[in-house]
Image (tube, rainbow, N blue to C red; front, side, top):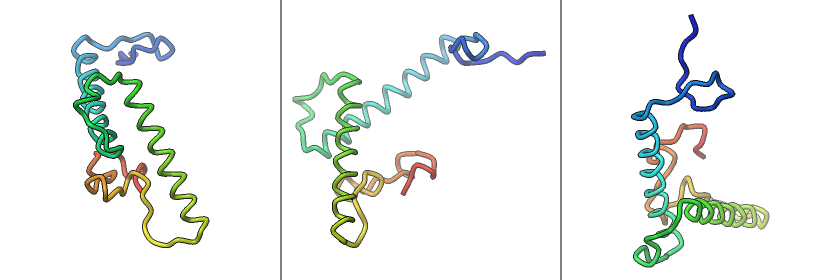
Length: 111
């Protein structure tokens, strides 16, 4: 007997999430975006009161740009032969010492 699927993607058997399942998923996404907004505004030294109405896409775009700039800075530093730990987001001591463990990400996402 076929198992029902939770995915709303028609390409995966046509199953649908329950209303409660969707509500929980959206709540998790919104909570994570709220945390990401706080982190990125702090990292960019922006006043959060002036950016209270950022759209979700804005938060994601700001984060991608910031991580790319950190990555470029890391590559530039390595090409000049600098030593020591690099700041690439996962080990950003200036942003409160968050890493993949404190973010609740899988170990494969960490550095």
